[in-house]
Image 1 (spheres, rainbow, N blue to C red):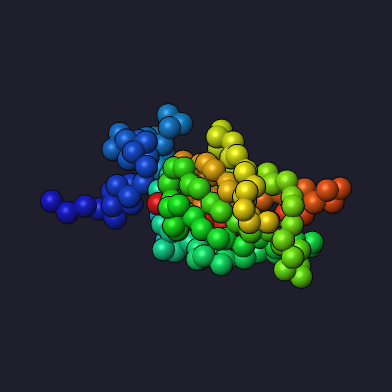
Image 2: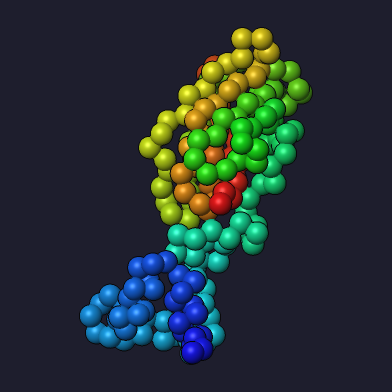
Length: 181
């Protein structure tokens, strides 16, 4: 028994879509094929719905994701007033579930900064964050160094983590993006 192209596409999709495909319905009760346009034009479901960056129906394909940062110790991002650099990550690279990050915050000249940090993880393709609030703890021994934990990346896919910096009357922010599987 060989699988039709339609069945292979459905098997690669989420269980709900597979269920609906097997039952021959698209969820609106009329029995029309949900992907008639995509099938006729050769486009994939993701192409017809703007999901072209590694995220299809809850599955992640980090190998094809082009919006993420390549993690390494020393990865650094600069805002308008400050720079944030990864000192360590556990696990490394960032992965599903709880992560612990140690970052260094400096002014643009490289001097350590005493700042307040708020970490906000967000899945841009899904429009949601995480219910787990990360706690930021300044290092007792290294000026400008902070532990952020847990950075809760509870779903596979692209996460953008915004670090908002309170510089004592001024603010700045940097965004790190990681795809996790």
